[in-house]
Length: 165
Ligand code: ATP
Ligand code: CA
Ligand code: CA
Image (cartoon, rainbow, N blue to C red; front, top):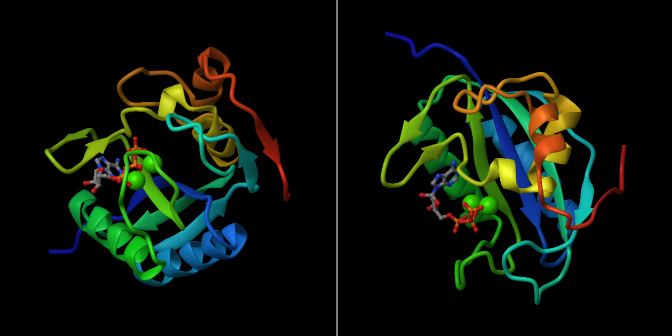
C-alpha cells in the first residue's frame, strides 16, 4: 500500500559558518530525500531566541509534499542535520543547521520523539514570519488559527528582518 502524499511545512535555521549555504544545502537535500519542494520563503536574519549569547540566525520555511510518515520524515531531517555537521551541545545553542517539522498536513502527533504541530511555533516570530510567506492562510490544527493570525498574536519581539526575496 502506498502512503498518501502529505503537505508539510518545515522551519530551517543556521547560525554557524556560511549560514546561507547551509540553508541552501538543506533545501537541496530535503528535495532529494524527503519529497517535492512546493514553496520556499525568503531568508530572514533573526536575533537568537532562548539562548541569547550567540550569533544571529538565518531562518526560512519550506513546504514539501512528502510520502514519508511523520516519524520517517523526522528521521530523514535528523540525518540531513548530521550530514551538514550539526552537533548537539546545549539546548537552543548554536548550530550549522536546524530543521523542525512545523506542520504535517492537519495531523497531530504527540510521541516521545516527535510533537506536531511544533510546540513552540506560535511563540516564535522567527518561525511564523517566514512561514507566513508561504502559508499565510494555513490553519494550525489545534489552535484553529491561520499563520497570519498566529503572527498577529505572537508576543515575541525579537528582531526578524528579510535579507533575500
Ligand atoms: P526546539 O524544538 O525548541 O526548536 P531544537 O530545534 O534546538 O529545539 P533539537 O536539538 O534540534 O531541538 O531537537 C531535539 C529533538 O526534538 C529531536 O531529536 C526530535 O526528536 C525532537 N522533536 C520533537 N518534535 C519535533 C519536531 N516537530 N520537529 C523536529 N524535532 C522534533
Ligand atoms: Ca528548532
Ligand atoms: Ca530541531
